[in-house]
Every structure is written in structure tokens, then in C-alpha cells.
Length: 391
Image (cartoon, rainbow, N blue to C red):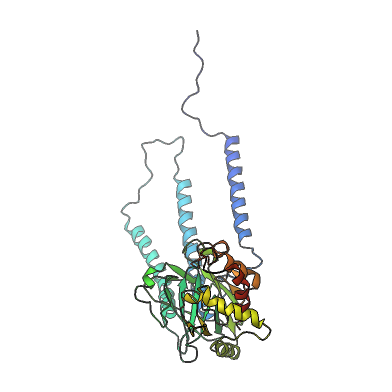
């Protein structure tokens, strides 16, 4: 009986039709990948476009990129071109003897000098503007406005330093004057640690924070904020506008919701804003006086005063609101964002935040006061009225 024929384990050469299908498949994949890459860069609204610079501290690294990138592309094309040429030119042919090797160039002094000197020259050309840009960005500019930045989970606090703005503390929104450098002193603190005030980490406080990264793409590059250290960087906006920023280092559950805005104003407008913010908070004229009074009392009774500061606040027993574990709420109603810049500041969002902070922003350090029986649900509406009246 004749044994059935078996397929040989060794495969033969790829035939013409098979090779053609592989090539067409690779071509389709390459075209699709290129199309996806192009479409990904076509966002109609890109508020965090690193190439749309709006100040000198963003323009400097962008200019450095314009120098380095073409050189890197040229090196990439050259190296891969030589690689492809070598693969095609010296590929094994079917009629060649396996024992024969191509002509060897090991120990070729001229080639070794060439491929040592050329990269060294390229690196030297890149190093000069890179080092100069690095030192320029690290130096503290003359006549800079100094602002202390404290990164917590999951929001940024801004404290204006100096005689004119030493009592101004805000969160989520950083106001700056146009065409003036702003020098930032940045540190990371645990949200459960009272803010120490001044420049420099609190003893035992900053070490309990987590790593953050301060990033306003149109105004400057990224700067990591490391617990236990004070990091510095400069920003400047040459045009009036709102510049979106965010934490660019994973810092917990709500990292993606840790946002902020830099609001650049004309110098006169900025000074007027700074003067206004330095005054104690006062309820707006159109606010419901009775409801505001209830909310002011609830601010103490619901333990809000244990974590939040309000300049000018005086509790029933004369207690001041000075602790800054959470955001400073002085002039809260003048901010148009809340919860770390994640939501618009309005009554509906504030009410939802007070009723259940964790549902609103998972991982937030603010406890659920209603669930913990520190606040009565009926106190929510007066608190909303009181906070939204602080102008």
C-alpha cells in the first residue's frame, strides 16, 4: 500500500502572487498609519498647542526644536538609507556560495575616523544652542513678578509674593500682566498639610506630597514639582488671553482633572485685579442677606473653617478662617472655574461638589461632610449662596 504524500517541512520560496499580496497589505497599513497620524494633528481647537507660542519662554525651546529637528531627520534618513542600501546590495543571492563572505571593512581607519568625527561635529553643533537655551531658561529674569505655586491633589494654589501682593492667594487661575516675566517658586504639598506660607517647603509637609508637573504649553515647557524641593521656572505672555495648563505628571485618580488657566491681562487691569483681591471678601449687593448669613454660620458649623481660608471672615466666636489645607475661598465668586479648573464655577456645580465631592472628582481630599454627619443637607443651599456672594 502506497504511503500518503506528506508536505515537506521546508517551505519553498515565496511566489510572485503571494509576495504581491504581502506588499499590498504593507502598503495599505502604511497609508492608514500615515492618514491617522495626519488626522490626529488636525484638531480645530488646540488650546495647548506647543507650536503656537505666546511668550519668549515658550519660543526659546521652540526655536531650539527648529534647529535640532531637521538635523535629527537628516541623520535618520542618512542612517536608514545606508542600512537599506546595505540590506539590498549585500543580500544573499540564490546562486551565491554560502562559504563566501562580502568584502570586509573592519579596521578601515578612514571609515572609523569618518563615523567618529561626523557624529561628534553634529553633537557639538546641537550642544551650543542647547546649553545656551538651558541656562537662559534657568536664570531668574530681572524685574520679574514672583509667584509661589503649591501643587496639591488635585489643584494648584497661587500666592503672589512681594509688598504689593503678599496677601493675595488664589487657586486654579493664575493672573499675570502681559509682557512681564513671571518667576514661579513651585513645591508639592500634601493636601492634608496646612499651607506654611512664604517660599520653601514646610518641615515634614512637602515630603508628604506627590510628584506633579506644571505645564502651560503656549507659555513655557514642563517643570516637574518634586516633594521636598522648590523648583523654579519663568513664564511670560505677550498677548492678552487665557492659556490652558494642566498637571502633566500622573499624581492620582483625578490627575486628568488637575487643570488651571493662566489669565494674561494688560498691566493696568492686572494691578486693578491685584488690588481688588487684596481686600477682604464682602458679599455682593444682590445676594440674599438672610441666606448669606445662614451660609456664613454653616461655614463654621460644617467644619469648612478647618480647611479653608477666607480673608476677613469672622466666625460666631470671633474665629478667623486662616487655614489653607484646601483652596483659599476669598473672592471665590470672581473665579469662573472650580474643582481644580475641571468645571465651570456656578451654583449647580458648587451644589454637586458640596453634596458629594468624590462623585464630582474621585480621589479629592475633601471629605463628604453630609455622609460624615458634619453638615446637614439643609445647609448646602445657604453655603452655596454665601460662597457665590464672595466677590
